[in-house]
Amino acid sequence: MTAISIVIPMYDEARHIGRTLQAARQAALAAGLECELVVVDNGSHDQGPQIARSLGARVLSLPGLHIGALRNRGAAASTGQWLAFLDADIEVPQNWLTLLLDLEAHGQADVLALDCDTPRVAPWFARAWQSRTLRPSVPAVHKVQWLPTPNLLMRRPWFDRVGGFDENLRTGEDKDLTLRMSQAGARLVSVSKPATLHWGYEGSWREWLGKEMWRQGSHLQLAHKNGFSLRMLRLPLLSLTAWLLDFVALGALASGQLRLELLLLLVAALPALVLSLRQSLKHRNPILTLQLWGLHWIRLHLVGVVFLMSLCKWKARRPARG
Image (cartoon, rainbow, N blue to C red):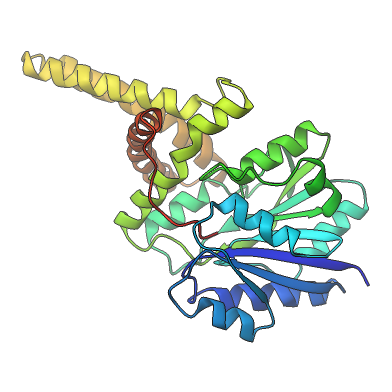
């Protein structure tokens, strides 16, 4: 029987790890795969490790490591011919592996992932923010250059060929890994239906802001490693432009030029509007467009702050949790 190793990094995820493990095991059973569950704990203070062990997972305790190192240690300790990487707060559908393995068997892809959605109980800003990554239109299978995703599936040789995850990256390790796989000749595919469910959604504005600051923390590292391309630096450049226009608008206000100030503020909001339209038009939902406009405006200002902090070698203090 074909074996799959499912590697799950974790930090204080007692609320979600049981659901994640049970869904993953059911998906492996439905696909007819022998399943090995490896949870790599980053020093949890809750009952997450005990819950994982009770559900048959092997738990490795490795506190203080970056997310890429946790994933690499889990992969090294596993034995399956297939490797899957899941975040600890992700619920996969029962046909997760059946669908993706069938695509690989028919020669359509080498590295695969499902899109990720948010449960309906999540706050509006968490649902809207997750919706920007969804592709409701057909076809359901999309060829991509990279897969920044909470679920990844591949045959082990692809993982070994590129040397696994970069252990120096605080965030963006999945994007970096799949970029290198693409450059090595792997065919990357994202499948929009069915989607996984992200139960670790942001329950408050403070949590959303904190996560976004953490997520943007590796822009400079990724650009330095993969080349300072316009695409790689698009968000930091848009952010710095928005900040510059804000400061010019404040100067106009101080000099009594109210009309000029309003015009500059409108221009400063245009990058956020463009990003919003790009991601929301496929949903045909004007309310979502407005929601994403506001969220992108906030995010662009956060990106500029984090980018400058990165230049000053400041690092966000947040344990790697998957």
